[in-house]
Length: 220
Image (cartoon, rainbow, N blue to C red):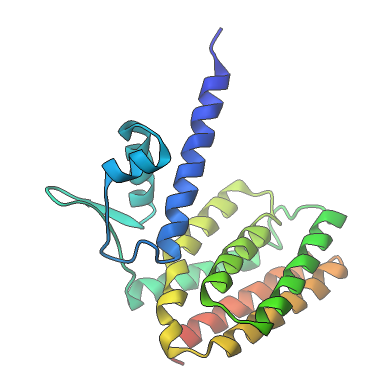
């Protein structure tokens, strides 16, 4: 019989490596233009180059890196045109989360929404750009998990990570304290919607904040 355990282990290793590299790109640990060395990464993660290349190929398909002959794998950048198109799609997909196969409301969802609101208040007392970015990633996944529509979740995730690093790059010209306050407002509104069992309202709140976020990033 086939050994499905090995396939599962390989898949889990792939996902962990992909998640780790994607997060580093989006937190600007690997800034645009950085070259990702297969040799260095393989040594760091204790893996051969074959699975690593599969991960890099996935990242390239997602638009986060590009492979250039004779140069290697480079982290890409995002221009304003791509950002506008991507945010347009993200805004529309966020609203669909509340309409397409929403998950049943549970105590676990409510507990998680409360946890995010509490973390937001803690962040407001000592704003930190990197922690804000990491928390935003976690909050995105929380929101995406409110639908069982796998195609919607996968598409939303791909688009989110195409633009996730733009915010950190924009911090020097933005008011971090104000951005944290806006984020906390979203978390509190989201919590109120979930406390009332209204996932459609939660999706519309997220949709509105994505729209406002793009307006601020684009300079008004």
